[in-house]
Length: 327
Image 1 (cartoon, rainbow, N blue to C red):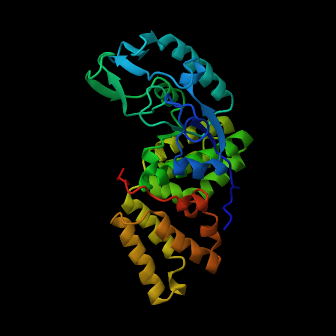
Image 2 (cartoon, helix red, strand yellow):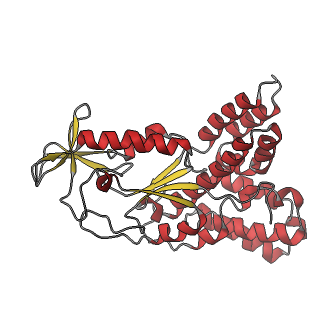
Image 3 (tube, one colour):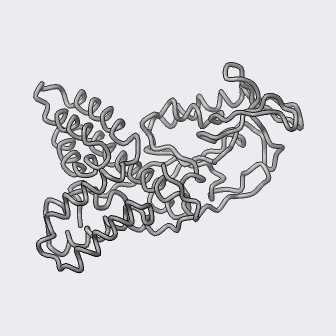
C-alpha cells in the first residue's frame, strides 16, 4: 500500500544517554528497546545538557531545588549551582534547533535536566527533603519553544497506547513538515486528503474544520492556509483518539470490503475490534487486518489513507514492557 504522500524521516531530538553515548551521571548508557527500534527510522539529533555545561562523566548528581518562582539547579554534594550555565546552554541549543525544527523529542524520564515531566523539584538540597514534580531545566523549555512537536520520555513510550499515539503524531508532523517546506496549495490538499480518516479517528470536529481551511473559500495566501492548518492539526492530534472514534472509522472502512468477505473473516475482524475496545490489543491489530483486505481487494480510496499505516509497520513489533497503561 502506498499512501499519496511519500514516506518521511522524522527529525527527532534524543537525550544522548538513551543508547547513543555513556554519559549518565554514573557513566552508564541506557539501552531502551523502544528507542533502539526507532533509531533507524528517524534523523537523530542528540543532547546531553549536563555534559555540555561541563559537569563531566561520571559526575555527582544534580537536582532541581526551590519553588515555582525561584528554582535552582544544584549539585548537592559539591554545592555547585549551575542554574545560569544551564540557562545559557538551553537558550543556545534551542535557537540552533529552531534552524531546522525537529518533529519530536524523546527525553530521559525523571532527569532534572532533560525530563519533560515527572521531575522531582526538592524543597532544599538536603537529603530527604520534600518534593513536587515538574519539568526539567531543559525539558520544560523544549515544550514551551516547540509546543507542536511530539514530546515524550522513554519511560512512557513503554506503553502500547502512548507509543502508538506518539509515533502517529511524530510521523504525521513530519509529513506535514514536508508539505509545508514545499508550500504549495496542492501539497496541503494532498496531505489532508491522505489523512482524512486518521483525522476523523482523532477529532471529527477538527477534521471538518481542517477541510474548510483547505477549501480556502476566502482565497487566503498559501502561507496563511498552512499556518491555520498547522494550528488545527496540533489541536486534532493533541490527544490519542477515543476508542469509540477509532472503532467507528474502522467500521466505516470495513463497509468498503465487507461484501467480499466470508462470514468467518467478518467475525475475525469484529472480534479484533472488541479486543481493542477492551484494551487487550493495540489499535494496530484490527487496523492491520483491515489493511490486508484493502490490499487484497485493491480499494484505491482506502489505499491512499495514511490511517492504515501512520508510521512504518516495523515499529508495531516493539514488545510492550507489560507496564502499559491507558492514556
